[in-house]
Length: 146
Image (cartoon, rainbow, N blue to C red):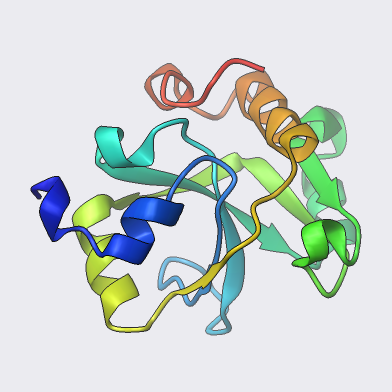
């Protein structure tokens, strides 16, 4: 997709740490979730790597009991974005081609938040992703070093 075809709001706001809220069909829940962009240059890379947030913190910790370093917790009100405490399991990232994301965004299926997660939280996400033994090296290469 030529950069000129990218929705202007998306082109200006899409970066590591951007937060979006939408329904993802690959999740078992039909409800919308918060997603954080984790790759360092999603426009140039033509794909978004996203960490999904869940409020089921206890379940996430139980599932990753031996690898808690791959979870990143966000307190309620963190970045003035998240109404409840939540966690990102950085072992399980979602990739969405930029073309598809742009189409969904322009249709209004995706809500964008003007405030990004903090640099501290972005570093924590990077560290957790790079600590994961489940994330392939080619995916880690798209995420900035911790």
